[in-house]
Image 1 (cartoon, rainbow, N blue to C red):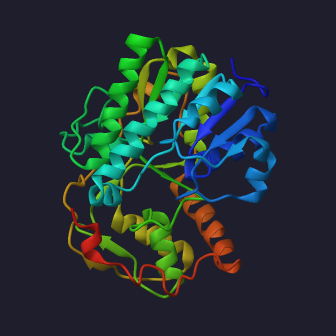
Image 2: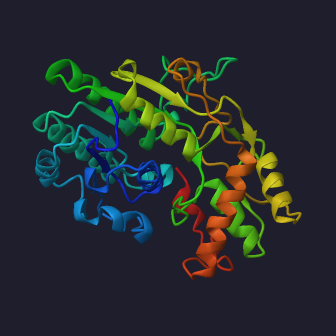
Length: 340
């Protein structure tokens, strides 16, 4: 059962979801000495106000290094939250070797460490991208479906199969989380193609039009990172979540036109899109059937407009601190790099 002294290790703890989860734990009064992080810092960001509180257990190590097994064994966590990996659809398709190395082989090191440390459970990020080639039911995609198309989603589907294998053959308990489009403050905006909230907001801040690839009616299920964190806690509190797969979304879709108009309205502007050709492999519409997660006693609570407002405040602070220049944001985009 989860309490403030539960020992938790987070891979990818300097990434978007990991950093937010650590911040959430600390805000709940969690003992900082009972939180450890493994992150190679290739894509992560060390945020002093968050990570300084756990710096004695902050390990700048790549999960592809087998030394991570020793780190996990020495820390003796009760739960491992495995968020580390290559998350960009575009980067994974550009370098499949790197994608497999990170998302599959690196994950084997993490799971082996969990076995050696007698971890109660590994809770890991799969992805809703495994629904890329599935037909969406009226209620939304459900956890019995999986038909990945892109290299990224295929590596994540392999990770889920590995977790099931480790459960059956080695006794490792797991929970697989199929995040839909997680949004909110602290999200990485430095990818080849940034997350859409940050991408739209920063382009508008720089006096440019938001960029859209393909159909601007393409719709996604956007969920606030705070609601995702609530389910992370629930995974430790409710044993019924063990050895299960859960969709984490809102069950609602917002298309790119609606999202752009909401962001522009909150920012007090009117802007059109800059339009690029569609990128092969991406689904047109994605919405999750979240009835299984709700049956565990969880429900998303944050409104998308509040998520937009909080993300704007975060990005305005980044601009003020000189971390990002919105005037040049995505101006050097090499369109051929993101083609599949």
